[in-house]
Amino acid sequence: MPKQIYLCGFMGSGKSTILKRLRTSQEINGYDLDELILEKTQFSSVGALVHAKGWDFFRALEQEIIKEFYSTPATSSQSFVLALGGGALNAPLAKILNERGELIWLNTPFELCYERILAQGETRPLLALGKVGLQKLFDERVSQYGLSKHHFSVEIQEKIVDLTSLRNFL
Image (cartoon, rainbow, N blue to C red):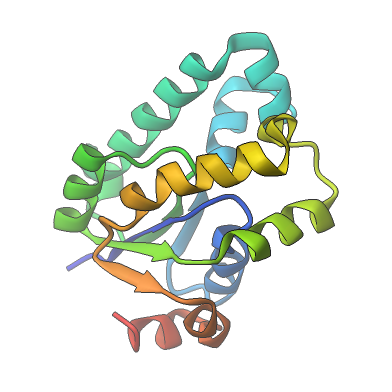
């Protein structure tokens, strides 16, 4: 039976880092939702896409691509890891992903997420909210992330180096 793993969490929580580790094991296909969106739209960055098309367009595209993963025979019959965007999860989607696979919340404290975001030096559209605005957004999203079947602390995340070590926590 195919193993479908969905990673969720706030930006800077470690989704891309975990995905990179799992991709190197070559036992499973790994996808980053933001990368898939940029490939589909031919934009160079999420910021450029959001600036040109708006958040509603971006969020609708997120939902469309996620749905393709869990409902299209070509992807729903394969094993994969999909790193979701920080704002992609909602209660109905969490229910579906928990039923069809393993929804994992990378439960990383806000301060660490914020430090990582700043250290990356990337221009993220939501940085315009400032630290206080991002903390508010983080607090609002925690309840959605908490609907995940699995909650991985930073300590657990650090122990995941490949698919075998991930399986130990599922």
